[in-house]
Image (cartoon, rainbow, N blue to C red; front, top):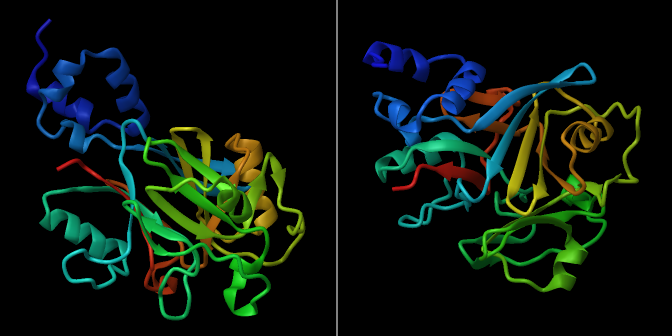
Amino acid sequence: MHRSPSLQLRICHAPRLLRRLLLALLPLALLLSAPGCTPAAQALDSGELAFEGQNYRIVHLDLKREQLGLHWRDPQSGQPFGSIETLRQWGAAHGQRLLFATNAGIYDHKFAPLGLYVENGKTVVPLNLAHGNPASGNFSLLPNGVFAIYPDGHAAVRTSAAFKAEGKPAQWATQSGPMLLIDGKLNEQFVDDSSSLKWRSGVCVKTSHEVVFAVSEAPVNFHTFGRLFRDRLGCRDALYLDGSISQLYVDGEGYTGAPAFMVKPYAGIFAVFTKP
């Protein structure tokens, strides 16, 4: 049966859940033939999730399909990107569309990564195993940990000590803290009724190639945020990325997380671009 271009356009601009259903039911060739419905325009697996009275933005990435990387400085000028918008503009200038971005690990007062930072196989900042420095903030709430993607494409979240013991070189890595979950258990430092409420972001690896990012849409404490990853997202190891300044960007959906006036320059940014 012939379908008109107007029908194809309605499919491409349908609400997210309906579009996913149509993508599953209709022939791929038909959908790709519609203007604005090319793979570069198709959205990532992103959605809002309610947990214990709070809303969160969740993004699932399949590393076999999406190329997740880390970005700190412009490779030509050496200047830090600092913001997701600057990174987006840089990508556009190089013919790439930014599909997803969020701030990476915790950084110091000089806006440099406080712990391990590996970009495209190069260790820019070494692993930090210092303990108890009050200036390190949440980074010193132990154990902290590492999110890493390895040269073969698989990802993992490990405590910093476990990452060092494994001794495997990473293609991309960021160190942050504290660990939210360790082998399915909440970090023992967390207090259920803690009054320390902040916008918070984190990441887990559900399978070797399935990465899940989450950011709260309102302030929450560590205990609640950890339970989100354990009880709702089904993660076993999860890493806290940052709070108060954390935002998550999804192409076509904009920003979620901390209010813009609270955001400060980032030292590292996770990003997925369209392939050039």
